[in-house]
Length: 273
Image 1 (cartoon, rainbow, N blue to C red):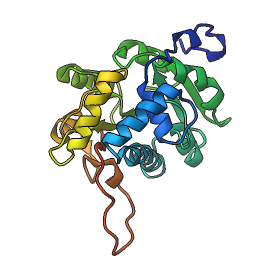
Image 2 (cartoon, rainbow, N blue to C red; image 1 turned 90 degrees about the vertical axis):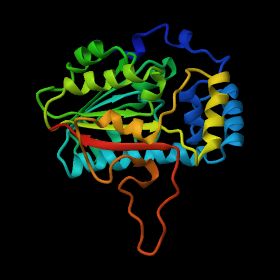
Image 3 (cartoon, rainbow, N blue to C red; image 1 turned 30 degrees about the vertical axis):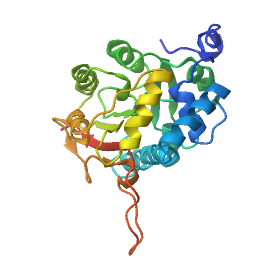
């Protein structure tokens, strides 16, 4: 079942404010207010190690907007399963999708109690469409699919959104298997939108920032190489420009201007044949 937020009396009891949490730090870097002093302190320390972390967070959010707009406006997608939603902020999936096609349907999935506490108030919908929220972990594939089917029609194409969430599955093979199981349940014409923190010899400060996070924060995250990120799209038809820095995915660059700087978050969009 989809959890009615107002009826879940124990949500706030699950929120741990003694340790920094990735969703709240991400919210802080994006200029949000749904965070605590411990999150802001850790966020500032990570920014000191990797000064570009704010650009990294913003690039991922803008990648979401461009990908959803392209899927709805150009490819006719009207259904989204957004797993690892994070704290609601500006230009959420449903806002972008329903801004183009008001009849779009979106199911958000996250296991963070603070996200759950804010979901009903912030994740609204147009009268023509529908937006729902599911309290579940990425690994709970069967439960996600069963409950999401109350809102989404799995006989019609669905865009599976996995932005910055597979990083929390440490085992490589398990992470690939989870993505495959979700995509296997979706019909031809569905799409995968995925972004992932990378490790690269050209970005040593990112590795240091991740090491700091894994020592002090929760949950732990795993970096992967750009080639390993491409592995999530095996068997699918990658849309141009492929798996690239989120700051460079289908971005309009004025003539004569250089491409945006690369960030340590790579992403791509692919179609299921």
